[in-house]
Length: 289
Image (cartoon, rainbow, N blue to C red; front, side, top):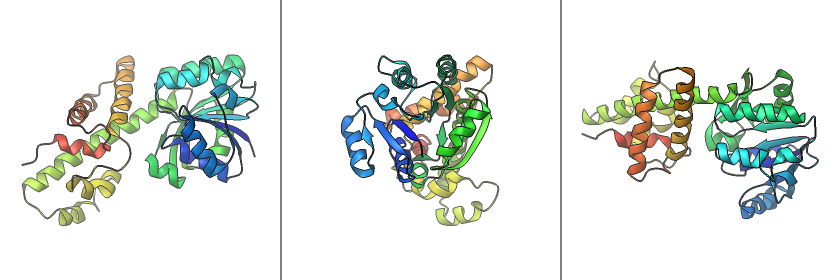
């Protein structure tokens, strides 16, 4: 069993840390909201730290799951950041979806301190975190990723080492690009079926077993048709992720015309008050007949 510091106990981090506690690891947890950290502690045990640096003292492994680049920079390299107290030879795993740039920066900073870093964004949403069925895409050295697998196996259904530092984050961008395109096609198909006054259940039955089938169709077709959008990953977070992908594309020279269009459609959904609705609310942007 490892001594683990876990930083960030939100809708993803909280359940993930819970799986680690259930597996018998010794956890010290930190969250910006101390009330949330105390609530987690009451449910799972472990200890509550007053800062990331405090949480990381004596830890074999530090895991973070925070909000964005600035949050990640603060909890690692800030004045009370975890890197200040992590021992040489320890392992840092980041599950935040952030830019590839900061993932590479943390790798270099960690290397200078003898800290092994893995950028490991996840896919599977809140349900995947709660059920321990996340898909994790990892960037870093092979020894570091192999060490990370030991603990990530507590909450992952799939772990893939995709390349060097930053590759995990760029793979997550690919994931979000694909989701955006699928949801746009699903939204247009659904609205087309409604305009044609088709039986929506029969349409779903007819097309969900063929080439049009997708996870989004299986899990969101009926709720999209009902204008129900309270199912996890929010539009605000999707726009953050698509922004990262578009920024990376400008650096690499890739073109993402559909992604850029869908990003603007999501901006329209935000303007309609849907920032906290799940990503299937993209259908609101497609005009109903």
